[in-house]
Image (cartoon, rainbow, N blue to C red; front, side, top):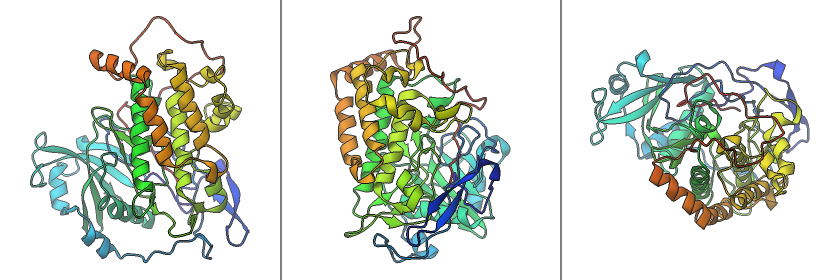
Length: 440
């Protein structure tokens, strides 16, 4: 919830837009783009949906389509009361969360974004009642700003999905508060923050190759679970800032504010309002508003590129084609001799060429232009698990465990050919444990 903006909010015409076709009428619809850079934050982040200046996002929001299509799913909508009563979550009172966060004091603030604020809090792990700061279980409390229909809609969507879905690779939503105009969510606290923090901040230790594979496998497991559930769930906002990491770098997918039920029966897609993050959203979804699980597969391919390269999906500080990671990297992914140009220099060559080419090949399949030709997430997961279980990756992982680190050890020697292309994006002045914004 909350890293996206609708076309009716925070629109910056300086960033332009694009015309897309209404899937039913064929009429052009203007998709407005923006850079959600006006966000403040503080250290200590490990929670869903915190927005920072670190990721340039674009709005991909257009009005919902009113007509019907052959792939449109029309589930019976639930009321807010039905969603809240059917969730397996604790209903907190506002006073309980005030106490848990020390009255939402400034020194408890973890981050700030368009949706509102996220605070660090403490609750008793057995009774889930508020406890003294420093005792009990640490949680992240997301407090929604009172204004804004879209924020409330995303809040309710998170409750709907995370109140019912449980998996080791999905972030745990502990409870919610719906009291008067107050809307809050209480999550488990993720001590390592987001994948985005570890990939793109200069002050962070670079993730080792084995850890990157572990992260890719964990994210793929979470998405595969959603796609293969009895009622398919399309995450719709797969990106580095929505991949959270626990103390052992195990992955938890977070931020279900844009999640949507997938098509049913013989339907191939659902027609919906276009929302997502610029640089990650699948081209066919942007062009038509027709959403399928293959849109998540595309976005996951972008994340694989970020893991390989250490570059952001979109980086306006670069020049020309290098501003868009997919456009820049794609020509090199199928060529073993040129793949080194894509690889993150902070890995210092400490990866196997075979493993890197395997990940590049999987990414290339995920990024296929035709959605129907992309693999299913279960197939992607199988390919990545095979790589993770390979002798080379296992050996590297065992060495890291002995050294007690999941980051790249410093070496005076560069083991791979330096890239003649643009270097890594500059580090952010923000603290390493901080989350980035999300867009629509």
